[in-house]
Image (cartoon, rainbow, N blue to C red; front, side, top):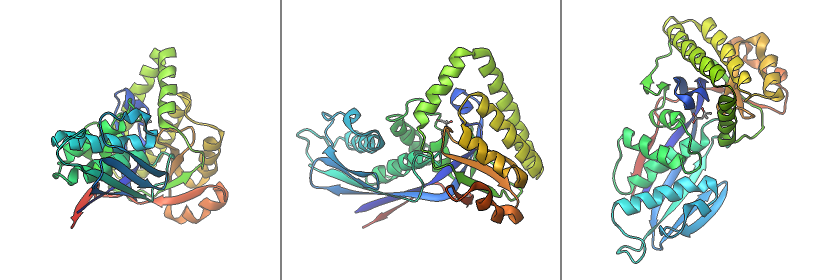
Length: 323
Ligand code: MEV
């Protein structure tokens, strides 16, 4: 029996970093996916096959998951959680079975498009699916627990949009219907980043200047409220302006760099607004670009940058069993 789940990647339209400190954020799931397939095996191990390599470790709770490479930890955590919760027993337990988990992904890794969160959501669904079907709320809760094994400060916003799909406000998880056609371009700086390090950097900024950080959180909240009105009013111009305003706040908390600034300014003449998406310090930017101008993008950004048009995924996580 195979339990197969797939979850979408994501972009953060507004509110990254500030959301970790309690503000709202707006996110959208995108049409790039990770698929996780889980099967039982006869030995007491967790076996993982992925483009990042393979892992084969005892499923036993005696084996510390902290000794596992960070990208594989959520899978070991989830495998153990489900085996333990069903009382199947590890060490000398009654059923000597392990799990084989295979990950196939078309989400670029480490560039702010939610590869890690989508993996946690798809893995939580696929692994638990061997035993029973989880509700969306349970999938979200479990995937956030898994994500915390690599990044304890996560706001949970990324896992939320990968679970539910579409465009959502966080933390309410209310769906937002976009009335105008969002022509969002995603451009990859090709600089890998580490979300945990960027979030720690922002924590230091906050420690050094609590007052300014709290002002920026208030500004971000007001900005998001205006974006929601702009979307209801079909007002792409305000939406774009708010993207650029949000970028100024991200510059101020120092998660931008010269490459990202150059990419954003290169797109100025053809976009209504642009900003970092995700943790920053590398990764991707997003820009609101008119359809007519899309063909000018490669020349403006240069050949070394990857860019594509973001299509919003509406399905969220999907799951099936194959006998
Ligand atoms: C990363 O995609 C988004 C951050 O806001 C972190 C988080 O929300 O957990 C930087």
